Length: 202
Image (cartoon, rainbow, N blue to C red; front, side, top):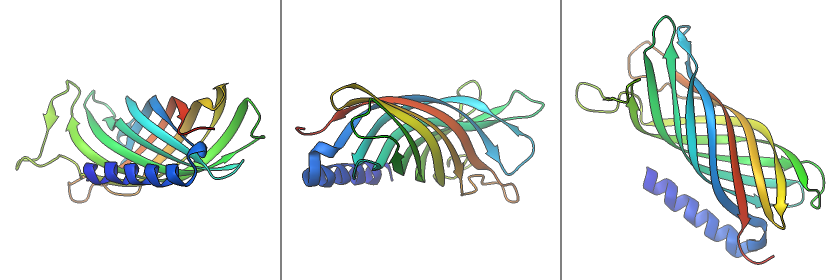
């Protein structure tokens, strides 16, 4: 699954770059989030980290496409206990972006929305111990699919180099819990910051 995601990102980047390299920018990204399981009343949010890379492709002055490839720490705490489940994912969100203002502006507010897919790497508890099922399989479902929506801004640091800030909400659509009759879906609020650099000559 992870190999397929990486190949897809590489092919997409090559295709877009060949078509119009001057509209493509890529860079590193880091962030924090607050996540919890929805579907049950006894859960509470826990803090996590995200780190990875992102790319933006500008279709025109106002419309763009964004993709991120992130290692993300999600999961949930539980009420009346200090027990928690930390889920470690590789996530791939792909979003449509609308930029406000004009192309020459130094600050470009934006809104974005789109789907994401996540591949579970492992589940750990509070002390970092990895947990699995009795037969050694991952404690939660390996695949997560959901949607993300958010707001943010791009701030031009210098010509074609931008500080990107995204404040987003994501909701999983799939029950990731393997216990029959108990539904857990990922939900998170995240703040991600990155710097994008141009691909190709302007």
